[in-house]
Length: 136
View 1 (cartoon, helix red, strand yellow):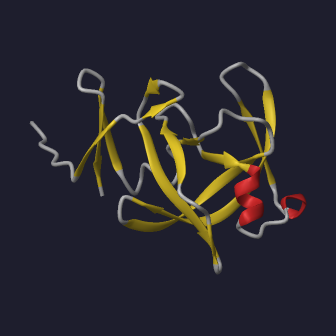
View 2 (tube, rainbow, N blue to C red):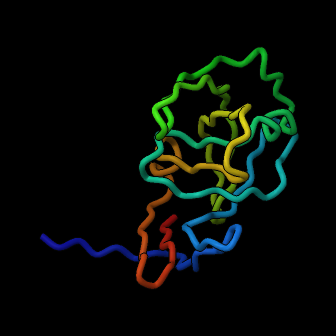
């Protein structure tokens, strides 16, 4: 059986520090606070949406009071990240999800992993054309 999927958005890969990758712009909110627009790498190999800890502080979280989640990074090292429930605003859709706040240096951008996000949006990667396809 063949399945046909229509994508609502075809987004050219933006360049970050001269490299084109499937980055996506989004915002997070918690209670009355909303983050500035953030840049995240859509990463089907990542389990969680991970953002810098400074974003959590902007949203009003006291990181010391949040539960931690132990994660294993691609380099094999283990890290404790802070877990919180927020609302994500992405591609004209608003939905609840759990994010991890990374207190480390990070990459300068967020990682948009599967849990919570991939249940809300469907992604396809066209590496030849360097575009990210998104269905809401």
